[in-house]
Amino acid sequence: MRDFAAELENRKQAGLYRTRRVISGPQQPELVSDGVPLLSFCSNDYLGLASHPDIVRAVNDAMPHTGLGGAASHLICGHHDGHHQLEARLAAFTGRSAALFFSTGYMANMGVISALAGRGDTVFSDRLNHASIIDGCILSRARVRRYPHSDMGALADMLAVTGGHKLVVTDGVFSMDGDIAPLKELADLCRVHDALLVVDDAHGVGVLGPQGRGSVAELGLSEKDVPVLIGTLGKAVGTSGAFVAGPALLMDYLVQKARTYIYTTAMPPAIALATCASLDLIERENSRRSHLQSLIEHFRREATALGYELMPSRTPIQPIMVGDNWTALALSKALEQKGLLVTAIRPPTVPEGEARLRVTFSAAHSTADLEKLLTALAECRPMLKRASAEAV
Ligand SMILES: *Cc1c(COP(=O)(O)O)cnc(C)c1O
Image: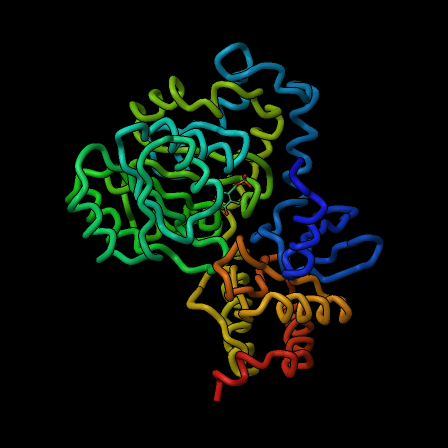
């Protein structure tokens, strides 16, 4: 029998053991974690909508009409008019012909990649893509070629020497680095090499682009440029689930072929209706995005002045590079003792030797919240040897 206890012990020794904290109450910057109040800088609720009264009300208003459970899969009798309404809303929001509502982003990536690529095809995947994309590639049984992060020269060389059907997959905003993929260049390369482009904009939807329409809309890229657009709804949108948007023909193909759409129970329709309410808010209110942007700019200026090593990101994901697993954990722990929750991200979520603190901002943070973080970071600064050596 495999020695599971020994494997867990090895993880502990390597500083890679993970634990869960128990949160009570609504998701917001002021969290109660294992009974202790903490100011959180690690949620993906970028617009502060996860417990917004309009969205909570939308769920409550829907429930008497829809009930709670999804009851069946979409292809049996689970496809409710609440889902249908959300899909039309998502298509309009993204400027696409049609959209499909998936239960999670993980399932959307697994289902879409394995439906659109198969044995004999090749999938080109950025080295820093999300785990669900990596797993979707494996599930597809296609040949997988991982290209160096956002390296368009390397990708062009790979595409040029590969025959057969080609799929290129990338995060829009990279989840652990916060930088944005070179989407225009990717669209051009895919056109030249007859490859199908899939962009997972989990961290761009709601945050980037006009009215929060995402990183693809920010560049004005059409359905022709980016035929398969994936987004998640549990992050900036503040609800739950995910979507795929694109040409009607491709969406029809996915209804036939995407196993994670077909063989799972439909989401509660009330969640779909609350998501429509959230999209209304996102389109209507630019103030959340402009406040978020000013928090990000202020943080970058001040944290850099403190001598911390930031990454080239203008999104709410603002990692502080640390390097060593133990130092990242120690820094996270020291911040927690000062009442702040900032999680350390370690391998395999990020490459070996690139452990970091993943600081994320939300429109629900006040300027005073940001000042608390900066004060604590100033006090913890001596813990970081690596960055100080590099800063001088
Ligand atoms: C979070 C995330 C997902 C998974 O979405 P869920 O709805 O949480 O399952 C997929 N892709 C990226 C890039 C993500 O960051």
